[in-house]
Image (cartoon, rainbow, N blue to C red; front, side):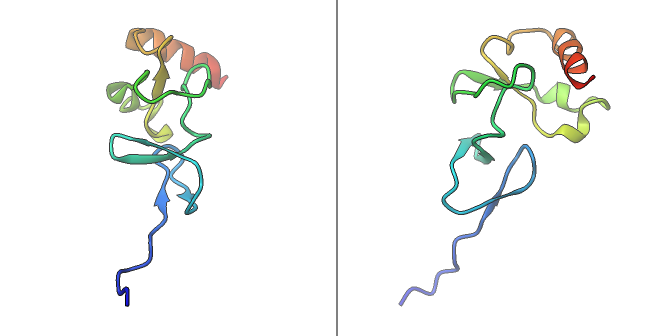
Length: 93
């Protein structure tokens, strides 16, 4: 008999909503995200693991604090924080 607890649903690191068991996910830095949430914060392209980066410092600004982790595609990950911020502000208008 298996007395282990049933598998628990994880929550998405980006939108904070529950990820149903068996749903397609992206597993990054020991965290999970809905596949559809794991996209570039600037251009919304689907991210490829190993070809993207997170900007932790930028996520701590007042303007972006409530948005969760910010991930960037290879085209945008090397931009400076100021350039990223300007592009994100334009996107939210």
